[in-house]
Amino acid sequence: GIDYRRKAPYGQIEYATLEYLENQFILDFDEKMPFDLLSEHNEFRKDLMKVSQQHREYGGKVDKIIADVRAAYRDWEEGTERYRLKVESLKLAEKRVKDGLALLSSGRANVGDILRARNDLYEAQIQAIDALVDSAVAILQIQVQPDSLWRKWDWKN
Image 1 (cartoon, helix red, strand yellow):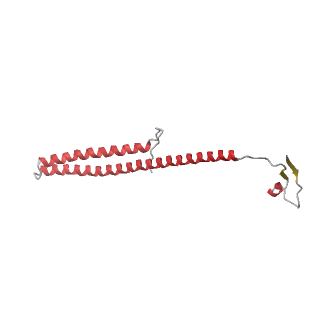
Image 2 (cartoon, one colour):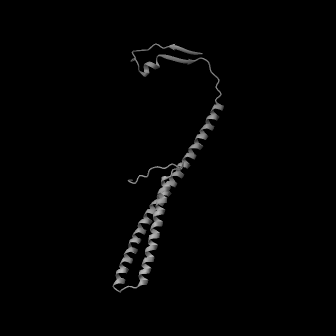
Image 3 (cartoon, rainbow, N blue to C red):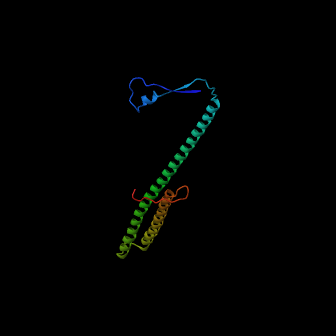
């Protein structure tokens, strides 16, 4: 059985300290209890392996999410830069048409030059719209969560 004998304090020990509490009781086992811990040890090891496997799976999922977010962000940056360049190209095409019309009115350009400039302007408009759509799609890919919920886009950061 277990022997709970009160131990007399030796010397003066301050009340409510750890030393005081340690000297209050003695806990002795007078019998050796047979413990077969092999099965518990094996179960613990199995549970530990399961936890380790779940930790690796979690790490793999986190790495995949990080890679997906980085790829979506990179696509958004590329789309935004492409759109910026296409808008500059569009402005140049508009200027070319305007300058061509001025040259045509002064007799220094022909109608073929104006038609080519207008064709280039239409092409630049189409490419700018395509780049804008690609950028918008990239933003949507960043905003959509895996569970199909939306989060508000923070335009300030």
